[in-house]
Image (cartoon, rainbow, N blue to C red):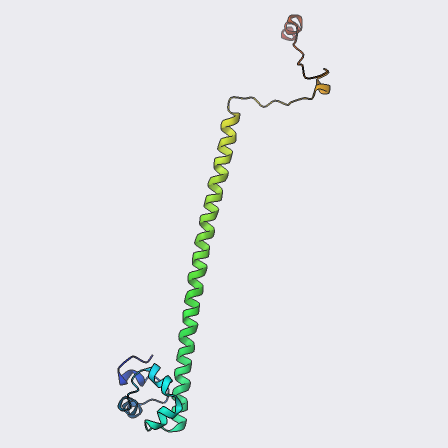
Length: 144
């Protein structure tokens, strides 16, 4: 809206025409910040009527509110974009870790056949000793 040094940009404010902008410039109020700092008393001292001064200050306040709102919106977008990137990165890292774990498990079990481990009672034996089949038992199982 209003620029830093030109009286022409001050005409963007509500209630500021060419004549009012010239009065403001002659009084040294060339920026929106200087107008805000001068307040109603400073504007009336510059030769501006009280209702016009109120309208100008209201426009300055609205401009500041709009800028603050835009800045907040921009910051929110930036934060949400950063959060999304972080979440995506964390998901990728977790997926890589899961793949590594599954690869480790496959490598550990490679070459082994899956077999059910039976307890001693289920195998019909006592203690931890394994029952070794006799030669006759092996030959009988091959004939079948």
